[in-house]
Image 1 (cartoon, helix red, strand yellow):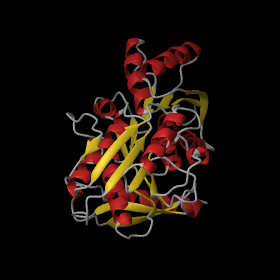
Image 2 (image 1 turned 90 degrees about the horizontal axis):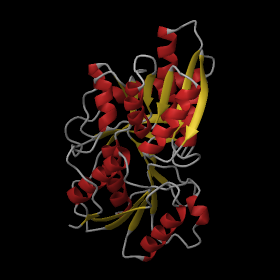
Image 3 (image 1 turned 135 degrees about the vertical axis):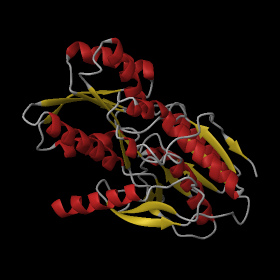
Image 4 (image 1 turned 90 degrees about the vertical axis):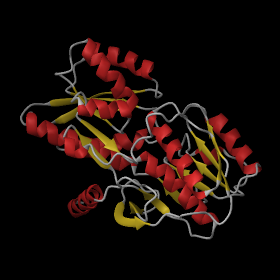
Amino acid sequence: MGKFWQALLTLTTFGLLCLPTADANSQTWPLEQRHPFNAKIQQAQALDYHPLSKSQQAWRICALVPHLKDAYWIGIDYGLIQQAKHLGVSLDLFEAGSYYHQDKQLEQLSACMKGDYDAILLGAVSPNLLEHFSEPLTKPVLALVNKLNAEQVQTHIGVNWYQMGLSAGNFIKADAKAHSPSQPTTLALLAGPENLGGTDLVEQGIRHALEGSNVSISAIQHADNNRNLYRDQLQILLKAQRPDYILGSAVAIEAAVSTLKQKQLTQDIKLVSSYLSPAILRGLKRQKVVYSNDDLVVLQGKLAIDVTVKQLEGAAPFGDIGPAIVERTTSPNTLSNLSVSLAEADFYPLYQVRP
């Protein structure tokens, strides 16, 4: 296992050196191809991906996402919209409204399967969603962001969420060792919906990273991505304990920044985000947040449209494909090259593109 993780670290470092710069519609996008497909632990290979400049026809794509309530899925939406416009294809996007709305997403999937679409991008609310879909898959279905367990789905656009947890956990382990090498250190997790999306895999990655360290997980709390819910959880957590670190979704950490300020605990508890948002970026720049993963969601959205069109035009399935995870810290040299990390500040969710 030691050689494997060393190789994986080398690939991750390579990915950091090859970040996309100003134009995500340039001749190549630096990505990674991961094997085996849909596995928790994967080997990653650097890939120079050549995006299309235009489509052969005005393909019609249906995209289904859990929600558009936070910067993550808004960034995905932004990338989808931009590339659909760039290639001249039609796009209709539908949101379930929550990870807990499986029935609604199944209804939306049925409508898209019966509707006038050529392919479906499915950001599933559950990895086993298709086990509950009784209709035949008569159109290509590609997994968008979230893992999707189904033999018929052979393309997944996104990152490895186990690796997202591993990256965040490795930062905490190294930081604790550097600042409190002989002291027991506690970490509280404010995770997303339990066993939905990538939450479970993130937790597994964190636990693996912390093995053999002086950091122990002192609390785990799950909630839908709602800032008020996280504020309530923070109040309960901080009444019971004072962890050294709090790790959570961007929404949870955004809530934690203000809560710690109110309780005058900003200097006592370090905040780590599992993914990037505009508020988390501000927190890093102001040293209110110490670390965040960045999985380049805008590039993921662009890539999703691009590989869908390529498959419609005869390409083989792409397996697990997506950008390498970037590590953002308070160091200024990690806070550049953000053009494919976040939607533009004035962007608001859009649901339709027509050529």
